[in-house]
Length: 427
Image (cartoon, rainbow, N blue to C red; front, side):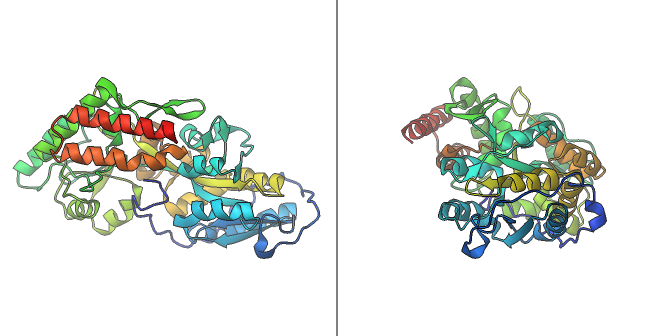
C-alpha cells in the first residue's frame, strides 16, 4: 500500500515552464560554492564531477525543475543534471543503484519509502534549517528515528467529496449522521447510494478506512517524536474490537460493499448516484470533467474520537554516496524548498505545498484549502520498513469482517493484530 504502487491514480500534470523572474528570490543570497576535484564515473552518477549534481525526477516535475537548475547553476556554478525516471520505480532503483555508485545525488521520493532507504543505507539526513517553515505533518513524514531525511514539497490526504446538488449542506460530523442524510437523498429518488467508498474484495482498503479506525482510538502504531514505533502496535484491544464490530455492522447493512471497487465507486459518484464519496485530490480533475458540482469536506468520525486520515507526502532525498552533500542540501532546501518553487510545483500538480507560506497562498483555491485542513489534522502514512508486511494481513482481516465471513469480528481482528506483531518482532 505504498504510495509508490497503485493505490490511486496520480493526476496528470501539465508541462510548466517556470519563468526566471518567478525564481529570482530562491537562493538569491547564496554564493558560489567551492567543489572538490572531479572524479570520473559513467552516467553522471554521484561519484561523477563534483561540480555536477545529478537529480532524479519524473516527467511531471521536470519542467518545473529545469529553470530551478539553471538558476542554481548561475548562482553557485554547480550544474544540476535532471534525469527523468518512472515514479513507480524510483525507490527500487534508488536502493539498487546508489550502492554501485551509479545512482543520483538526490531524487524525488514518496515519504513512505524513507524507512526502507535508511535501512539499506542509501540516504543521508538533510539539514532542513528552520523546520517551522514547513507543515509539521510533512516534516514528520520524512522523519525516521529522530532524523529528517527528506525535503518535503507536497502533502495530500483523502476527504469527503460532496455532490452539492444532492447535499447542499456541509457533511455531518459523524458517520451515522452522514449516512442518514444520504439515505434521505436516496429515499427522495435523487440518488442510488447514500455514500460511496471503493473497496477490494480480498483486501478491503485499510488506507481509505483508516480515518474511521482512528476515530475508535485504534491507530496502527504508536507515534512519537522519532516517528512510528513498529514495536508498539496500537490497533488491538477493546478499541480495535469496537472498530471491528463497526466494520461488520456496516458490511451487514450494505454501507460498505466489497463489490464496490474504486473504479465503480468513482463512476457512480461522477454519474450523480451518491451525495458523498471518499477520495483524494487525484480525482478532482475527473470530477470537473464530469461536470459534478462538488465541495471538499472533513471526514466524519465513526467512533468518539476525531477521524485522522493518512497523509502522503512527496519530497526529495539525498544519496548517502553523494560527494556533493553541501551543494545537494543547498539545492533541495534553499531552492526546491523555497516559496517560489513550491508554488510552481503546486500549480503543476494541485497538491498542497509543504512550505507554509506557499500553502497559505495556495489556499485561495478552495479545494487545496479543504484538503489541506484534513491533512493538517492527519498523520503521515508510516514510513517504517515493517509496513511492507502489514497491508495484506490488515486488509484481508477487514475484508473477512465486512464480507460477514468472520464469526467473531473482534477475535478475527485481534488475531490479525497478533499475527502482525509476531511477524514484526521476527523481522
